[in-house]
Image 1: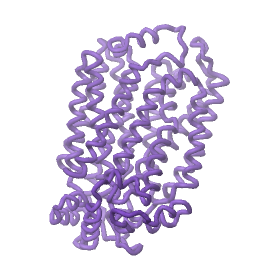
Image 2 (image 1 turned 90 degrees about the vertical axis):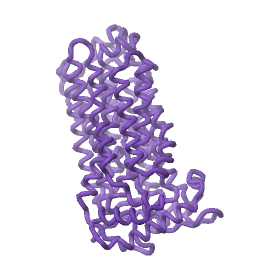
Image 3 (image 1 turned 180 degrees about the horizontal axis):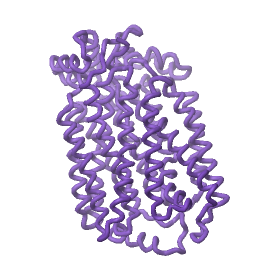
Length: 530
């Protein structure tokens, strides 16, 4: 069999026997509902904050601005309180991910996903029943805690349970569910906005209970990963689960590798301190850079602008639905493209192609809006031909993000940290992602007000920088067993090989064997899909 769990023998390319078993597919689908929850939370907040009944109750200042036609198109929603409603979720996620790192290591991946589901359910109840701003924000904070725990455990779970040859595809299930969650949230917001009586926003926020319930149920029924069981000393149980998920009795080589990697990892007493050691710096630099770059692609700017652009096509009040369905559907389909191609074409090709596509799309949109869309509300329309062209560019941008930086920003870090720093590395990855998601969510509406169409040029500059980073500093990790990353990737790279000489004292020296189990992918970045 050409695939192996997350391990492989020390020396070279032999891989462990593994079938793609139903239990693996079902477990991964159930775990990936964590992405559905995150996507729904991301999508729903943008919709309810544009509902007049919601604004009138919680943000009367913004509500009055939306009624005033004298205000600039770009500045109507420039309000720190409103931005805090969206961004508080990411700030809570950022904080909770450190607690999640502890539970993932000590209790396992499965209980951590269960904790995430409970947080999601509690936050949903508070939001749907909110009577004042404090109740609303506390609900969002609880949802954020759920995000922190889910983003820590789910990608790790997916990477540890999937056979190597489909590891990329299964990991991207998490990202696919994020895009599906956003699409559902947009459709539900469109429907609830039409409810008379002003309580539609409660239904929108309350329906988050559906994906929250699915994640909670999923966490109860999935198997724990053999990596986690072995890490916690439950060797026989780990062996039994490994036999079930690999669909073969020939699991002894992989089992012994997992036991050895676990033994080596236990010698590391301070995983966060260990992250800073010379040999772990390349993985750390790449993980942090990918999270920052993912947020600075400008996906938020495009998604926010879509309703305005579609409105100019003459769709009137249905603009939000059309924009949500079209960009949401493009998002979902393009993430599907990534699942199919990531293990065939490789990570670098997707990122470099998408960099060119995103850069061209953003520059084109900035030029069209700069020349043709006036800030004066009375003249805020584009000629129909240009509007259609802009919609094409929007879809071009969204599709390229969805098959590249969206899922791969999570997948690549999940393939690179060795076991001894894996949980700490995932924490840092999630933490940096949520920190910059928070920064963008808190500042975006203000940036839009000041930069106007120039915001697209700002983000296209970042896309240019990140594409050069990929070209020169990001090695290809396609189809390389995680435990062989050091020998076959890092020690072959023109720059990173300088960090692989293990000159430091302290801690075990880790060779290709230990890197077996890194897994953990993403998120999307969900938030990256705002």
